[in-house]
Length: 216
Image (cartoon, rainbow, N blue to C red; front, side, top):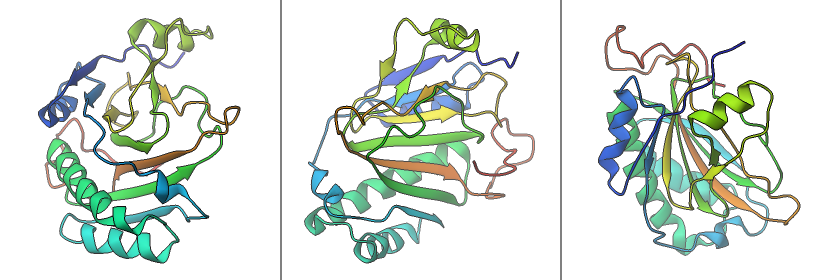
């Protein structure tokens, strides 16, 4: 059976906690932060999901243009989102010694990724700007799911919390999580995901977080 039993989380109200993902014993680092804007207007209409690779210097202009060209409403919020994405991208790159990354911005209306799983990446940053945050399991409940049982307690990130989830390419014991079920309640989520870009590392090949083969 695949060893998916441990999810040792570190939580704090400061962004410095994200660097804990480099610790062998840490599989999930959570920066708990308060909401600072209502991004719901960006989900209105029919915006098209975004997915592109970037470096830190190029990100603001690229994301600004992508929001404009792909039907994202709430134009008065675009600069606020761009500024926050730039902060999170910098923290992600610093935590993982990255030169480049992939950004995804998705409007979710279905129960996508509804099963508990681990990602096929070294680590993935996830934050929710509108709607329910990502569900995750602690050690004991990850073990129950690995054994085919139901978890007893499901933890959930709050909107605006930033989770850095260690994946299968970095450890045999990755963080176990899922997207929250929202279809029954007709909920909607605005979700941003940062992944390492292929062969984008600036650190050496011996780093525990270096071996990226393919993005999931």
